[in-house]
Amino acid sequence: MPAGGDDENVVVTAGDVTSISDSATGADAVASGGPSIAASLATDPDVLNIAFVTGGGDVQFVQIKVADLVPGEGGATGADVVVDAELTALGADVISRGGGAATPMGTIAVAASLTGAGDLTLSFADGHGDLQLIETNVAELLQGRPPAAPGDGGAGPSPA
Image 1 (spheres, rainbow, N blue to C red):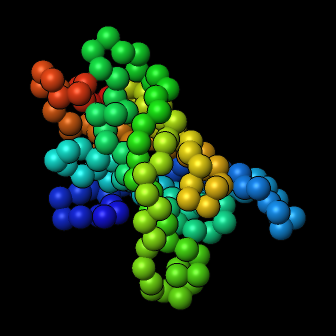
Image 2 (tube, one colour; image 1 turned 90 degrees about the horizontal axis):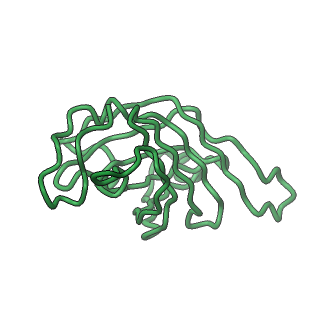
């Protein structure tokens, strides 16, 4: 389920979304998405939910396990990793009508980087074949995370 459950804090933060498409229609292949990104952190396990508006006007939700983003012991903070994420889309037509169902797009591979200051960079091909590049800061959400327990997959302390 996309972000916003009862046990989640939702933070709306500034960010950059760039959508790159095949552009068979003759439209500009590179488009900027919405300037605001909604992020939330679900627990058990910690899952970071990122909702954003694409350059085409759709809303997409990416869900990534935090333990996959945070380097394990001895890892370099901010290192690029490739992780699995769940993708859900809400089409521009559904948004303009004011109602409708979201479409689960399935599991995707995401190239990600999370720095100790909470700067998050994601790049992936969405379910429509468009490349999405996202840059935002999620430090506010990750500040209160507890230190890693031995064998927890390297979740580690919050990158504050």
